[in-house]
Length: 222
Image 1 (cartoon, rainbow, N blue to C red):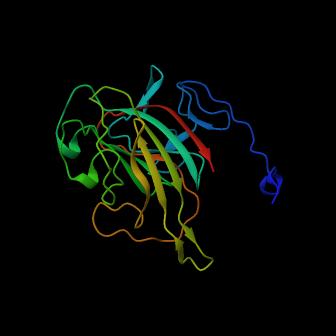
Image 2: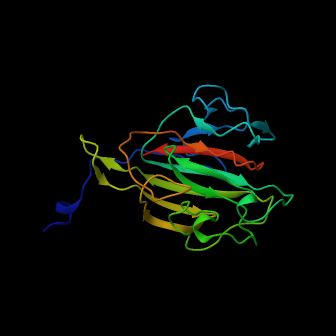
C-alpha cells in the first residue's frame, strides 16, 4: 500500500479557539457572570431564577427552589465551577450540599467533602447513590472547584425500550474521578433507579438549603 491510501482528508475538523478562563468559541455560555437570563425556576420551568448574582457568581437562595436551563440538551461537555461556603455549618450531607442534574434527572453531587465523611456514593463528584468517585479531589471550603463533565445520554427505541444506558466521565479539579461509567437510571433518593424513555433535558441545579456558589458555566453540545 501507499501511505496516501490510508490518509483521510474529509471531513475536516472545524476550528475552535480557546483562551485561559474563557469558554471555547463553540460553547454556549450558561452564565456570563452578570445574569441568570439562561435559567428559570425549577418549580414551574418558566418563572425567573431567583438565586443571588454578585461578584461574577451566583449563589443558591435557600428556600427558593432549584433552577434549570431554558435550553434542553442530550450529549455534551459541561463545565461548572462551584464553591461551598467558607463558614462550615453542619456535617455529612448537611454541609455545602447542592447537585448538578444532567438532563434534569441524573445528579452529579456537589458537597463539601473536605474532611467531611459521608456515604461514599453521596460525596462530592459521586453519581448520587450510584457511582463512587475514584478519589476525593475536593478543595477546602471557600475555594473554587471545577467539574468537567462529558455526558452521553441514554438511548431508547421508538417503543420506549432502553437501547443504551447513560454514561459519564468527570474530572474534578482536573483529576479523573468518573471514567466513562454507566448509570442504572435517573437519580433516586430512596429506591432503585429505573429508566423511563425521555428526550433532551435541562441542566438543573439543586437547592439543598446551603448557599453554594457557581460561576463560569458553559456547555458544548456534542
